[in-house]
Length: 114
Image (cartoon, rainbow, N blue to C red; front, side, top):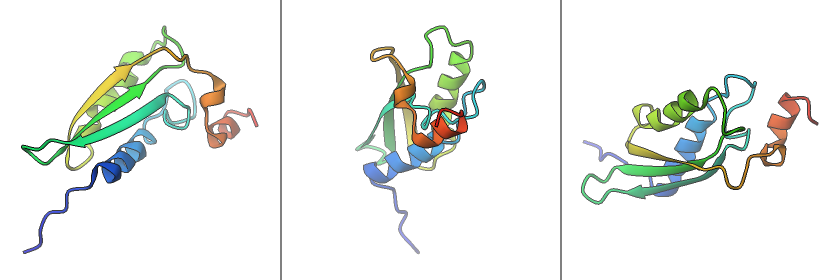
């Protein structure tokens, strides 16, 4: 019988980033990670369950973004799609404000900015 391998905090962070790359801003052809909306992903291990809890600090392209609730809910629900991820906490911040400088080169290319 093989032992269950729970990912390290760093491995879980990579899995969460991969999951974030699967969430697209409905108004733009770019995922929220490459768009630069994710400022930080921090994962830790719950000592009782040995499962992971991750905190994602993110912003939106605008404080009045009409799709903000949907985007944040998709981020919060990552634990439903990633094995061993027990909880996801989202810290929504607007300082520093989002700008095109936060976008990856791939996102800029997709949006015709390069």
